[in-house]
Image (cartoon, rainbow, N blue to C red; front, side, top):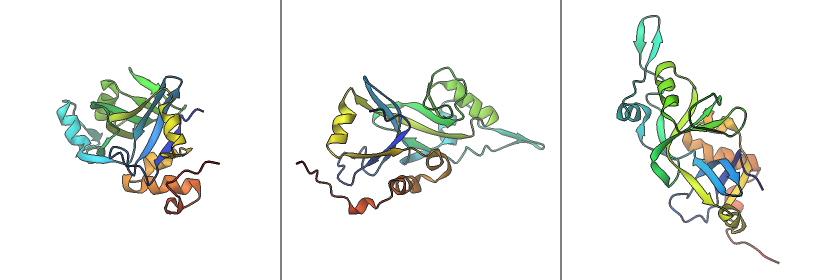
Length: 191
C-alpha cells in the first residue's frame, strides 16, 4: 500500500483532537512510515505575521512600486502534532529548493528558508500553503489505523488544496468518495 498523493479523511469516530475532522495530504509513505500535512486547519496567524517573525519581507512589485503581497492575509495551518515549531510549505509547482520532498511531478513539500525568501521576493510558488508541524506515523502505524476504521482514503485532487478555502476542503474530499460521511457507521464489522 502506498498512499502518497492521497487524502486521509478523519472518520466521525476520530477522538484525537489533533485529527478530528481533518483532511490530511500524504506526502511520503514507505516501509519506514508516513508523513502528511493537515490542509484544513488554519491557526490564528497569517503569512504576514509569520514572515515578520522570520524577518522576511513580503512584497510585490508593480508599475508604481511596491504593494502588499497577495500572500499577506493567507492563513498559516496546523500541519500536525509533529515538529510544531518547524514550518513546511506544500506547493506547486515543485521547483528546486534546498530541502524538498517531491510528492508528484507538480507538488512538493519544502522545509527550507529559500522557498520563503522566493515567496517574499517574487510571489513564487504562487500555489502554496504553509503549515507549522506535520503528521507522522511510524512503520505500520498508518496501516493499523486504517484497519481500525480511523481514516478513509481517496486520491488527492490538488484543486481542493490550492483552490478552495480551508473550511470547504474536508467536504470536497468526501465528495470525491461519492457518498455522505454521515451515513457511515463508526463500528467495524468482522466476519
